[in-house]
Image (cartoon, rainbow, N blue to C red; front, side, top):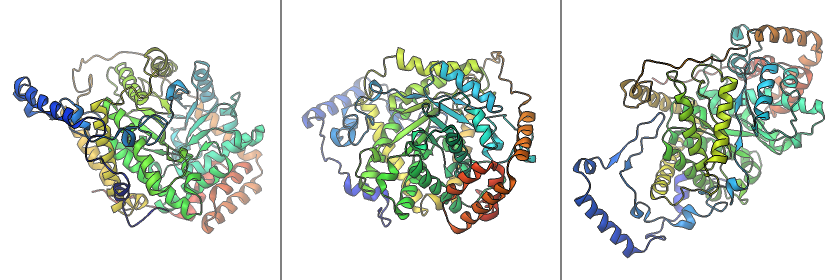
Length: 585
């Protein structure tokens, strides 16, 4: 069990020993380099460059880490190759979680899809699979995500508008019609723990009705408290402690019953897109992951049993080398946390497995075809950083749901990186770069420092509940937006080199009859189900919430009985009550 009297940084400091002198370079050799470098600065480098030796690249959602003009062996003089870099597939996994990485298995090419009704999204999924996508990445509309049925007044005008609308199990059956769920891996973007507890059981019941055993199902659910309590914009929130309880209930049930499923993708992506740096994104996610491990150990489970199915979800930003370095840094740091803080026994338990989506917030409406270039660079950095799964945002996403043409171009971007650039032929091709290794070290230090800040607040859950993380987000967001408006952060075509001309193209149009179709289907569903079974299932869920039982055991029965997402959400609100987020000002 973790030592609660020490911070994670203190535990790692005791166990990870830094060498006093270089384990890679001869000391006499380093002395010669240092002498040569100083002479070069004196004889060759311009005075203005010496004054500005370190600069901070200002990019959208960057981490403001100063960069020297050049990096040399002196920058990584005290690096121990075996302990800090190592070989791929071996501790500390800086260079990748597999020895052969993409030579053995390429990154899953999983394009985000979801709009309109179930039949609309079904057609797009099949289109992408037929064009080479190797996984499904499913997005829901705002009513489904906020857990309102499509006939709720809160849903009016939003049904199917930014994702697929789902109300009950029959919608799932239509959504996956003609798709082999035993074969295809699905990332189900349920976002919140309360939503995961309601939507994912419907997927499981769909599998039951098809005769597909749960142990055949492969994929992941987000199930992330950060999204529900920090990133979510809603009028209704349940308290953080209850939200975290539901998250861990989901983890417990899925781990026991759906063994190949990733029960959470600890979400850094949406937090960063909401307004944080890449460092904060990873620090909060790591603190969250540790809170999960602590709670599951308290419930009586072995760390390895939980950790080997825990995964992460990252945003890929525009600071190219930072993005590569921080993936490497987080992989090493997560290994060290699991090994030294939690005493994990299995290598798999220590792996930072991750999906990455290129940044949506870096895309702009002006000259939208430029966005294809932005996303391509972000995707390349993700591959060079060693991700297991990737989604590339489409050029028109700043305007609407991606068109079929734009979605295909994003998929083709992944395929071109894999097959035409040669970057997947060598494992961790940037490993050993003086710059990359030095930046990796800096990123790890900064992530760890922010983890300590969260621990000083009382841990992840308390840092959410007391408003600490909300204040950090809003302060960063305000500074970021100011820099964009003043032009400090340059975005080509938006606030820099504005042409005043925009490309014209046919933006995606939502299916206009979606809302009417879903309303009629929901009406028929309510008329044809056994409402006595529905009420019984909801009553049993209500009791389970009050008595501290695992809620997902009861939401599965709700799905079987034909309960809707909105009906189950009402039970959660009734039992747990509503929480008001602390003021950030």
